[in-house]
Image 1 (cartoon, rainbow, N blue to C red):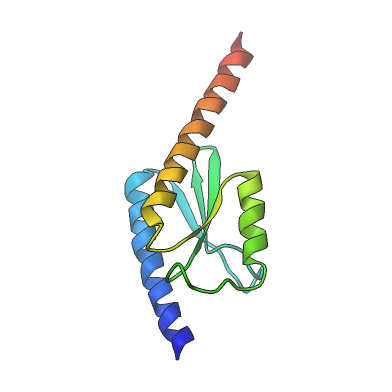
Image 2 (image 1 turned 90 degrees about the vertical axis):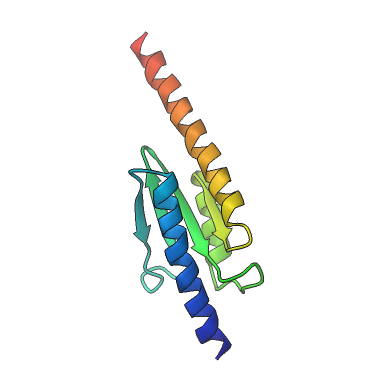
Length: 117
């Protein structure tokens, strides 16, 4: 019974999160990943301009991690941006994403400008 309730809470949170991400990151593409295709892959991939992030949604801070989730979040974070996200840290993670995406944009602009000289 607990798993059913937690899944429902996670699903509701994910819907709220997606709406919030679309408000903040206009023109972003949000993909819902299929855990049956690749076990442990994070729930969401967010593509924003030339950067990306992966988020694993949890119903709460104390929700358990399933097999391979820690691996894929750590891998995503080493390549770009990856986090576990839940209602208690949602705004903090979104702010971290905003800073990350802004830094990526500025870095790519500098690289492009250097190539023009």
